[in-house]
Length: 116
Image 1 (cartoon, rainbow, N blue to C red):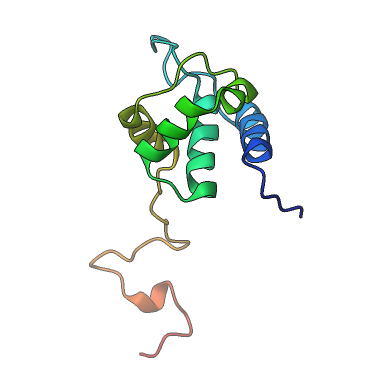
Image 2: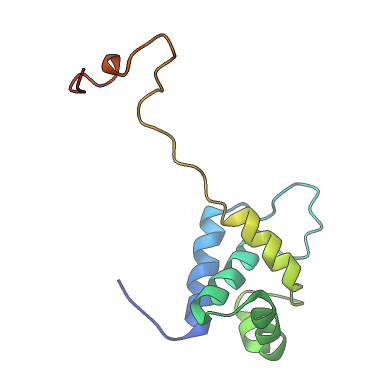
């Protein structure tokens, strides 16, 4: 596994990975100002540089060469990044491997080694 200290390389890898893994837009009627891979790359940059949403927005405003790496025409507002993070980085609850016993069934039916 390679590591890097380059924000440009982080953006390139995150954008390329997201292009393969995510649909371009969240919905077919999306405004299409920013693609999901572009937003994901911005979020990866945010985590890499340990910035907040406003910080990554300001960084992208100041550095046109970073915007060019992921073909950003304009910089997303910090709330756009926050909403994208809620949507793209959702934590799904873990589901149990075994079904829950009903009130009429005992736990021993599902766990044969359980103490009785």
